[in-house]
Image (cartoon, rainbow, N blue to C red; front, side, top):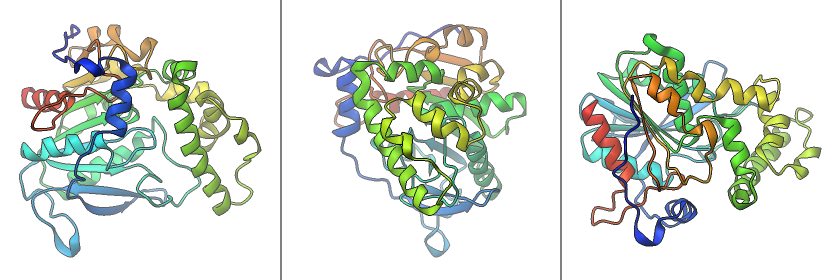
Length: 332
């Protein structure tokens, strides 16, 4: 589909990519949605914690699914995020207010409790998203499901939709990704630049802490000697992400998990919103040719917005990205 021009206009003092990225992450204050948690098991013996928000509690403190209606939004967070991150909370508030039930799921090891297995989550782990979607659609009366992802979560929902193509569950009515690293190599290269090392450092520190915890629980299974020298995703993914999740090396992982390689097969209305000044994105993270070739895919590239930013100041405390998602869902 032809690339859409964007309606987003940033606040005067937050027009740059870095200010919007930092402000939305560190300074946006929102009430955590009234989630009720449900834990489900994965086929390989691990677990996922799903945080639901609908109109009333269910039996034993669990959500009573589909009581509000028949529309469910599945929210997928970014790298080292969780269901309480401001961008998830903001989207949950807006969609819940518009009559949607919300399921914000936490990836393995991201819900506040270590996962059971040596493996964790990664940018292409659509098998876990499939478990969540199957669980929600099997146990609920939802007739319309939207998949909304941010950053890594955006890559997940796009890859998921592309992998399934025409065979996707017909209840999946729309897919939306904000600030999506559609090309994992290009994003890793971009974050390795000197001006972006602050972001890279935060991720490496957080991921390394989880590896050290796993090394205690799985003695002899991880070699942590090189970890002190890791400074980039190329190093981390080569040493840990790839071998722990069945990939040959970082290059193999990035190639097989980049959602840009799956966009041609998407068969549901899909919106990708990637700001031009996003410090995390470069190159094929802006999949212009792929969007032009698939009428189901709309690529919107605001000149500003940063990474999962799209800040807006208003009485309702609603960001532009949340209004844009609701607008797209209503149209789809």
